Image (tube, rainbow, N blue to C red; front, side):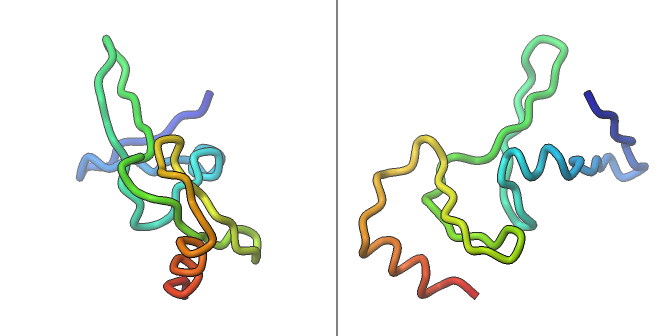
Length: 82
């Protein structure tokens, strides 16, 4: 378990451990829902697979609901990677 502090603007920083576990990166969208008295945060899985850089290596990350990725889709992702 980890704690975070709510700022006066209502913002909370997601601890690095959780960002890494969920493959969250700056600019990613997250979904927020209430379940009972708990706030649940999860990655927005409406997107497609994307290429991210982790520890100096390119990694293809896809949400569980993403469509299967073929070689043409991977080439397109690589072409748009900075």
